[in-house]
Image (cartoon, rainbow, N blue to C red; front, top):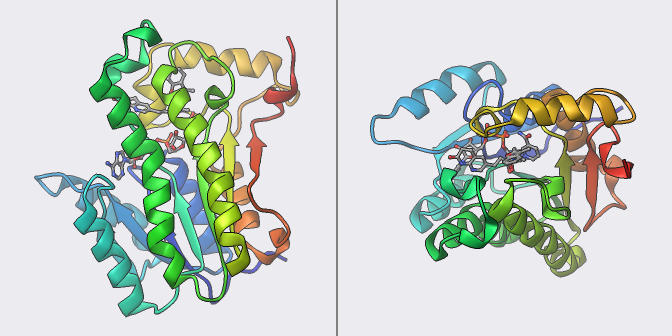
Length: 258
Ligand code: NAD
Ligand code: 0WE
């Protein structure tokens, strides 16, 4: 049985009840993990209230603001973990952002600023959070990030996010190589398209989902819960021999040629 009792897990990327991170947090909680949740703060405190209400049933012992563009917030997040828990076992990186204009039209028209934003938030943040987690993962650990097929194939309109995901998957390999001697495993889950806040803002996402439903071996898309189950597995000792990998949770879509 999958058992995460006694493990401390930090989950980033919950915005609402459709977030993939929410599916992951629920499965980690069910497996007995002690949860810390971060949220992206806004000026009005609306996000804080919304996410706090959502995660309340999971009894998080840590609930902190963490905008990954803000070094101080990252520092204070890990200072809080050090102080309250003393040790971190599981880090879930489940966030991405690109400007909306950069997710449509010609990739060659991507601006310098848009490229920088997408890679800073979606790619560099994994490197930075992992670096901050490293000294706290004193009994080994598991770091998990979320990626998408658009990082290895040219998916229409995914554009600069595809480049960010390619960099993210390469970062997984370099982090796995560096942190392996400390028994910290680093892996990515490549999820098929799921309707979330981020994906619903994308034009044509429903057509993409219908295409997957026709072509994928399982003839359907995947759920947040299925991604959460895979994250719980990768977090656990059942996955003790797996690091540096990209694991597809996509109803088999990635293997198809037509
Ligand atoms: P979502 O909108 O629920 O989650 C994205 C999260 O990123 C939000 O919680 C948001 O607050 C956070 N975020 C954005 N900018 C941030 C910043 N500067 N600092 C901290 N947090 C920030 O959407 P989602 O689909 O659940 O996305 C989660 C992850 O899953 C992303 O990495 C995404 O690329 C990946 N993914 C999504 C799909 C899909 O189809 N939905 C498929 C494969 C991979
Ligand atoms: O990684 C993602 C979503 C990434 C994303 C989405 C948005 C929309 C709103 C990043 N930044 C933003 N910025 C916004 O302003 N996915 C894997 C879902 C997704 O996004 C696509 C897809 C799929 C699938 C964009 C184009 C084409 C396909």
